[in-house]
Length: 303
Length: 244
Ligand SMILES: Cc1cc2nc3c(=O)[nH]c(=O)nc-3n(C[C@H](O)[C@H](O)[C@H](O)COP(=O)(O)OP(=O)(O)OC[C@H]3O[C@@H](n4cnc5c(N)ncnc54)[C@H](O)[C@@H]3O)c2cc1C
Ligand SMILES: Cc1cc2nc3c(=O)[nH]c(=O)nc-3n(C[C@H](O)[C@H](O)[C@H](O)COP(=O)(O)O)c2cc1C
Ligand code: FES
Image (cartoon, rainbow over the protein chains, first blue to last red):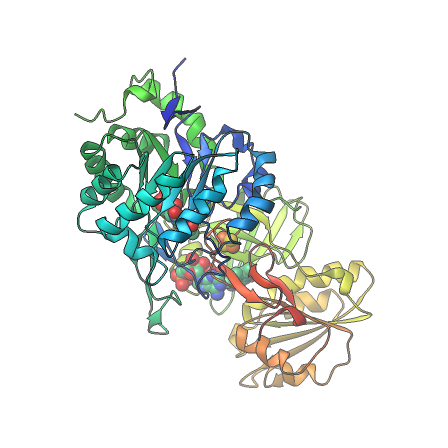
C-alpha cells in the first residue's frame, strides 16, 4: 500500500489533488458525474465582495494545447455564495473546501475573509491576487511586492483559516513575490494563475476575445508552471501548491518533485471531466513505477 | 437534471454532403439523448478544446451530426475515421411544451441540423410542422429531401436565387401562418427574424465554449433573466429572454 496523504497547513488531504478555481464551478456539475469526495479538495470559483457579471462574450479562445479565458470573475458575490452555495457544496463534499477570493481593494479582501471565518466547511482561503482579467484591481496586487504584502498582512490579521496567496506568473521575478507573501505571514503559496495572452481572428482581423487579452492555461503552460514552482519552493519555507497544465499522475509527481506539497488541476477538467478521478486512480500505480512509497516524502525531491 | 455522458463512438460515416458540409454518423451509447436542440462536444485529435455540435438525429445507438468546416478543428474532424470521444446530452433543447398547432422551423446554413430531430419529435407528438431552410447558394444546400421524406412542407430560400425562393428566410416566413417558431442559424438571421416581431419564438444561440457543461463560465451571455450560460441554461432561448 502506497501513501498518498499530504498535509496542507495542518489539514490532512487523502491525496494532493485539488480541483482549481474557475474550472470546477461549485462542484455541482462534477458531483453528477462522479463522487467528488475522491478529491483531496477543490477550490471554488473566484468570489468577490459584490456580484460580478464578468466580461462580455466572447470569453474563450484556443491555443495550441491550451485555452485562453477572459471570464472576468463572474460570481454571485460573497453573501450569496455563503448563504446559497456553501449549503449545496456541503451536501456533495464532506471534506474541507478551499475558498477562492478576489478583490479590487484591500478592504474587499478583508471583508470576504471575515465572512468566510464563520463557515466551518471552509478549510483554507486562497487569495487570488493574480487574475489578469480585471483592469486596475487584481493585476496590480499580484505584480507589486508591496501591494501583495499589504493584502497578505491585512487578510492574515483577520483570518481564522490558513491563508494561501495565489500568485500571478505575469511578473519578472516570481521569487520576489513569494518572499513578500511569506514575510507578510502567508500560510502557503499557490501558483501559477493564467499567463496573459491573446488570439486574433484572421477573417475578422480582430481579437478573438472581446476583452482582447485573456489568461492562457492548460497543458501548454506546464513547463513554465513547473519552473516557477521550483524557484518559489526553493526560496520559501511555507508550503507551495503547484498548478498549471497538470493532466496526469506523472505531472503530479513531477510538480511535487519540484517542491509542491499539493497540486491543483484546472483546465484539464474542462476538456476531460473525469481527469481528476483518473489521476487519483493512476497515482498509486505510477508511484510504484517510480518506487515511491509515500508521496509526502518526494516533495522537493528533485536533486 | 439531465446529466452528460462521455462516450467513445465508432465512426460509421464522415462524408461530404454539400460544399464544406459533412455528415458524421456515430455508433455508440446514445440512449440518453432524447431532447431536440441539445448538443454534444467532440474531442478532435490534436485540438485542446472540444467542438460543440448540435444533435441532428438519434436513432437507437446511432447519432447523426452535421458540421461545416469553419476552421482548423472542423477541418481536422473531416480526417477522423475510426473513433471519437464525445460528451453527450449537453444543454437544454427546444421547449416542446410550447409547441402550437402549426410549428414553423427555420434553419440557416449549419443551423439546419438540429431542426431535423426537432421536426421528428414534433411529428411524433402529432403536431403540424412547416420548414424553411435558408442557404446562400445551390452548392450549400443539404437535407431538403430528408425533411421532405418526413412528409412536411419545405420552403427553400437562397440568397442568389439558384434554388427556391430568392432572398432570405424572412421572405418565406412572412408568407406563412403559424403558432410557434423554432430557429437556429447565424446571428444576422436570428436578428432578422426577431425584427418580424413574432411573439412565440425559440432561438438557438452559439457562443465559444470552454467546457460545454456549465463549470467555466466561458459561454456566459447577458439575458433579460441575468447572466446565462449558453451551454447549460441555453443554447435555446425564448424571444422575450434575449437582449437583442
Ligand atoms: C450549441 C452549439 C451547437 C452547434 N452546432 C453546430 C452544428 O450542428 N453544425 C455546425 O457545423 N456547427 C455547429 N456549431 C458551431 C461549431 O461549434 C463551430 O463552427 C466550430 O466549433 C468551429 O471549430 P473550428 O475548429 O473549425 O474553428 P476555429 O475557429 O479554429 O475554432 C477555434 C475555437 O473557437 C470555437 N468556435 C469557433 N466558431 C464557433 C462558433 N460558431 N460557435 C462556438 N464556438 C466556435 C471553436 O469551438 C474552438 O474552440 C455549434 C455551436 C454551438 C455553440
Ligand atoms: C475558465 C477559467 C477560469 C478561471 N477562474 C479563476 C478564478 O476565478 N480564480 C482563480 O484564482 N483562478 C482562476 N483560474 C485559473 C486556474 O485556477 C489555474 O490557476 C490556471 O488555469 C492554471 O492551471 P491549469 O493550467 O491547470 O488550468 C481560471 C482558469 C480558467 C481556465
Ligand atoms: S462553456 Fe463552460 S460554462 Fe458554458
